[in-house]
Image (cartoon, rainbow, N blue to C red; front, side, top):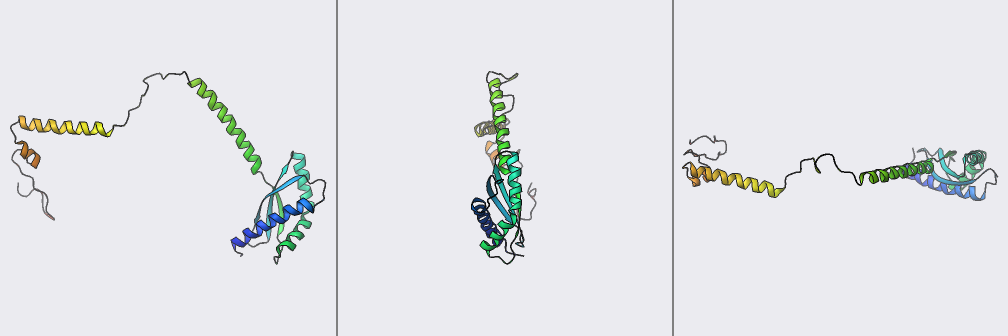
Length: 192
């Protein structure tokens, strides 16, 4: 097995060699405007897959594919001379569908944007059927503090009204029972 970094470097070099050979070396009239987009080399450096795009319609793509297949031997020999590897990888040409898929995706996104714009236009003057905000809103910190303080004040006032000592209430004693904090390993109810 070869080093993956070496395979990547070889793929970059093959892309450069094939692109320049297609530009200057291949004289086939069927070859259209071909762009080499990517090359992937197997880890054992024996096979190389060349991805390409062709500017034009489906007939030009087919003609360019035939021209690339007929020029495969010439391109492989040029790759072998330029790279200097022990075994020149075989070349397989595959039409790259990524640009076509990207165009299709862009078309779908533009349709979705148009539909969103139409929906926003319909919603602009719409009013909700019920309340403006039918959902409960989370409580704020100020509301919680006000409510907590109000409950404590009510409890202290109730303690004063029942004749209990408010100081005993604060100390944790209710009705004369004293609560002691738990000692390490001790029982908190001892001393009652």
